[in-house]
Image 1 (spheres, rainbow, N blue to C red):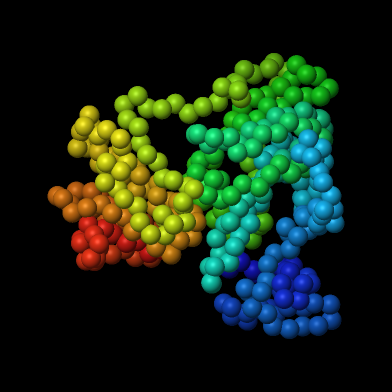
Image 2: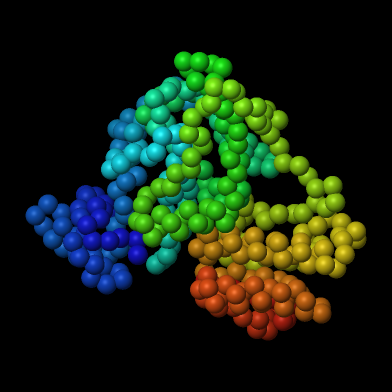
Length: 337
């Protein structure tokens, strides 16, 4: 459940904050606002953490700010500090669709829990394009808002490249990159959901050692293309439409030239795309997704059903069917979450 007794909440219709004093049922709760106590639907409530974080920005609404002049800002009131180090803070923002909620975008911040001031450069990119670049300063025990990233991009294995230089001693610097995989993102989201926590943090480094460490050069970051095969990966620009309706697993839809692949090689490509698309559908809280596997000898369908049966036993999916459909015949399986 998203809310618990004692949680501070923002009542959307009243535009005021209150506290949950009792959970009535799956849809309603009793709220105390000042001296008044009343019932409210969960769909009319939201956590106030982001409003606290954005309060200063909202007060300065209309003021033109250039990106090179963005100042550090406080984004929430922590009851306890993080261990020493520099962190990437990920603040998921949810959108309600009916009785369900899905992550719409993620707010990204840097947090410096050290005694050092740093000059940093930061790049958020995918395999083919750069989404955001920034150079600025991160001061000791301070937060720095970087940017928002749509969840379609955030869940598609983005690369965060960064370089930090100690202002007191420029010889001390660290340069590296972080890649977030869909499975890891799902684990992070599940952990904060059950902990009723508004964000998750990723440690970038604890401290910079005296001897500089040579790692990846930000200017040359790129993904290597396979010399054996070029796989057409899941298109996140159309994530909601695709994951909600259908994923075509025919080999010609995944690989430009499959003539050099053996039967087992083709099957591995198809299963890899199936598991990736299934994970993405779960992460984005889709109600169902259709996988088109064709009829043929039924080998791909059999392997898919084995995986789905395992996930159904672990309660990761609700059900799956292979009923006749006028569009696919028996050549498609629909999965329900």
